[in-house]
Image 1 (cartoon, rainbow, N blue to C red):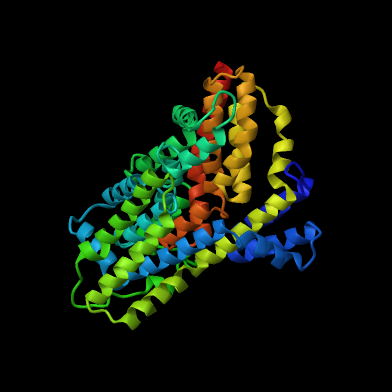
Image 2: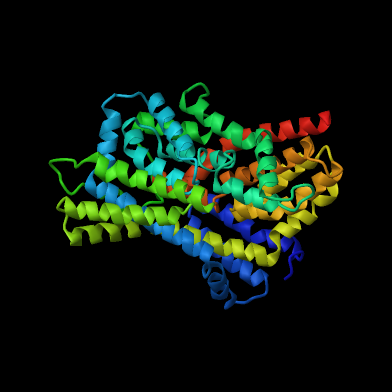
Length: 469
């Protein structure tokens, strides 16, 4: 199937089946597996098409990268727990007897600080703050929301992240944007128009500080945690298994140095990720986690923890992260299926005839959101939408970089993050559930109302800009 082909409405069915089943059964892995199988038959590939699809979806550098990243994250979290680093960190924060509100704000600030990687941020913030938020009786759903809504939304509005480089790269060659400097300059100017990302980050702060009260399913989750002491829903399946959450510190009578076991590994990750971004133009996040795992493994041995214990801890970390890995396996598979069936092409073809200068940013925002929701990938949405929407905006603007062009670029970026936030197929949403150790669908259900409120406000602003223009 070529780049402009599509199977029509049939192409929308697999992601639709996956999403409906995920919310109905609350079993994401089963829902994704069924949707992939149904999609293969709808595409006319037959039963053997399923393993062939998985080989195509998983046998590439992109999946290998995130698979290894997940493995190293699992091992590092296990090492943190075995050394007592997370307990020490929780005790350090807990000594001040901070209120639930202050802990929420602290978690929000941590998410803002770790802006350079949307993969690192939700797992790091969730896993390090979990014991603190548990003690304050904050629901795991709310922790996951704070982690998720301070990862991608922050990364997409900071002009020195991989997100900025990726979007800028897609802009090169479009109209007057001739080189990397032009592209980054245009992207930076579009940031104030990324209403969804900016308002999402602000809403987290307002909710964490209590200025805006929790509402919808999140309010029920918070009431359950506060009144009943149940941090997760009865019958839920946290995305981190007991092999990882039940690891006890090796030394029961003392907690080892938090500097060696926590701050130095984290500093190593940040130094390598930021340093490689500055020096090489690409943050080597996976390599940074590998270096931290090796460093902390050596430190554990120096502190007297046996090699066998270190290896057992590492294996428990891998086992504990497997639920998240399995969801990513099927998410990548259904994304490959969407590409084969032309899901994005169908969505574009059914809406591109509506476009005009006034409606372009709003329609672009909606379409990007639908594609990201259906595929679970914001970067994939950027790759699809920018080559289509930005040339249209430039055409309306007579080849100049005006408000419509900047708003359209921002609408693609914000719409991709909006759809990504609402989708159970999203890798960053999966990582937020992993970091918070919460049921994945519970996280999505409680986050959607907040995302929808911000999305509607963002859409209204884009429509307003269109009317003014």
